[in-house]
Length: 196
Image (cartoon, rainbow, N blue to C red; front, side, top):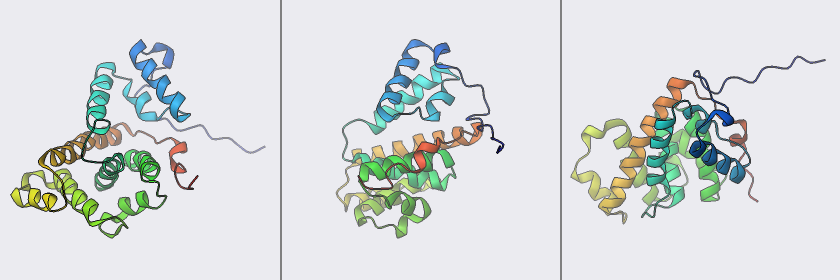
């Protein structure tokens, strides 16, 4: 009989059971599970600190779910590109899956993660990612010319704020995921790879 391997831990920190979580956090996680069919490990890992869980997801939702000049696919593309630069395995894989689904394109996430400059995306999205990457890696160098490059592709100053906010927020997320050794769910790897 083949030897079975234990499932690797999803975090180097303790992960509470659903029953031990505060009601508001448990309800949110159960809603995600109902919608996606599984619980993304980020929810379980961050539940280790309930107040930080609430703050993290409140800011996440303010950036990723609100009406914006950026499409949902644009936002996920920013996450994938900047997370790849920050070497965040969890966010590249998880948000890559979401990007494939939002963009209805099974190729885009891998292309953006490896080298967004060579990805089969429009010049508008390349301008967006150029700005996002500068915020992510060299924010101290942002200048008026960077805003002008966005304006030339139809982005507003409010869109620039959204791009910057997503880049900065996921810088936090990337660092925390790496620090915790947060393991990505196996389910994410295949999501959105085969068009329905």
